[in-house]
Image 1 (cartoon, rainbow, N blue to C red):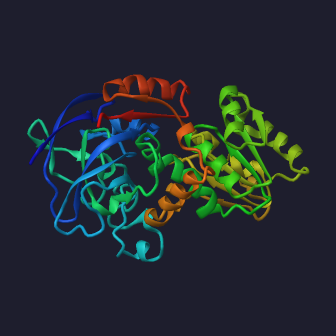
Image 2: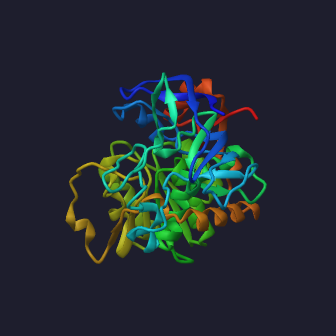
Image 3: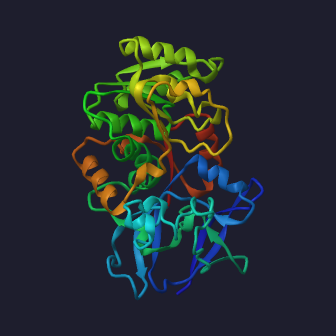
Length: 371
């Protein structure tokens, strides 16, 4: 049975509308998910300008309503969290443990760049024509047709609004600490930017039992929020502080004059792509979390001496392994998810949600669909 689905449709030229799409039943390894909540991210805002019409949204959670004949690990009624970095499990990178950069399905590697990925689903239509689903998910829609590999069973009691945000900002932040940087117990950590991703880097550092977590931001309210999520020290920066060099001097004062062991850039400001290098000690590790994809000038003296700079994607997630870890951390109270959801919106409130996101009002906004 074809489902009529109210969806957020990007026009490719910087705008979106709420309109009806038609979603076909699943075939092969596809799964039909009734979306219950969809996270709101800056990437979703950007997706309006990707030069094509698409169903928006790449963070989501819902309930399996139908499964294709090749699906073996899911059943009708399963609650699931959706994962946008969909592994094939067979390519070179998947076999090397790098499922987040799958050579076949990834939407952001192998030339596929922020779209529907390698094998775009065409069984969603809009105005009589096939339409892509953002990152092969399209979660800002009442119904989503996805590959079974995009689904991770929600194994603990958790509101859908909290589950929806696991599959991007939470995983990116936590994974950057634990899977990419391997932050050591007792280490000093600097986090640049206390938005949705930065707060989860902070949480990840706290869970890793870092000795100090120093958070830098230009927004005083965000710094107050950072303390709630595990920051031990805060630095209120200035927009006039080019490259955050003055803030770096403050960091050195807090770390015996040498700099931190690790620094994470979470601002998504290209001009700050090299800033974490100025925050770390010799032989320290700088992590570019927010995914700057722009040519920038880098003062190579910032690498002196023996510093490591890494640019991990999506916290190097292996979803079937890492998502259950996050669920268990939530169950035990070590990972705060409910508290990250500042406000929920109906689908018709997406413009307000984007406005609040740009104004920095929310740690995380979430679209909630009725049951």
